[in-house]
Image (cartoon, rainbow, N blue to C red):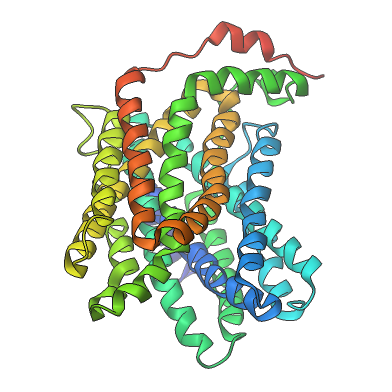
Length: 429
């Protein structure tokens, strides 16, 4: 019971909180909550292959089943583009938490059932896409295009922190019990839900509809395909650029660990291969938005992507472990800068296109999912043919080529055919 003496204190505390309800404080709060959820996801990402290998005893099948998650995510992207563009970020985040709960439960109690394991992979792909829809809608709700790069930089940095810590914690816990990381993941998920509830209560974020009411209804399904075609015609090079960044990331997470073990045979510092790859993602995204003023987001992303690719090419040409690790670190520096800049570019288009924003999100997400579907297959095949080290040279070369093409052919400002898009944006009553 609140006594008369305590009531003024509570009121004062609320006023102080509301006085700090600024875009920066909201972004910080949201990023912290995202980092909690990503810690849950990192624990699951580390455990899933272990459980699959325990059940299937075949690494090829393990990779094939895990790829179902990205395939499901890619399909979900198209379906989600049809949803209400005014759906709030909180709705997407609550759906993310609710659906993700099924993932650890299946692994804990039904790990021998292959059919349910595949369902778990599909759930993984769906909730990860829901999380990104939440990101895009939250940053759009801040209503400031000038800070899109900085906002994405903050989210990427907090995510990277969790994906750096998560595998280490999971590895330690598995030493005690295979199920311990999954129980820990459930606890982290519960904590995430609690703090997200507090976040919404404290900041009272309400996304008011910024689009005409009639646009909140569903667009005729067949016209959605034509809208996608129009947008892809304008964004296909950006799609390819994001696709290449995803393939590079998948290369590190599929054969990077194997190459690290190989590198350790010649030098103990080879164990830091993946650590040095992840390290720049902890701080580089924070400078996003501060160095793109003269050139613009797209050019900074393409130049960074080109430099990152060129440095990767050099990895396959040398044998010195110290130089290889240095090149990995430098390549990751520029790659970590390219990602938030290109995401901020897509964020700008989401703001510009209003009620068609979900289509832009779906296009961006489809490029990443395609990279994570194709990447492991290509990298695994190349590793057999040309050895682990040279795989990085190949993917780096492709990234360098695509980055240069984007620099040459993508204009500073991409103009969408607004009249044509409006003609296809017929509304269902």
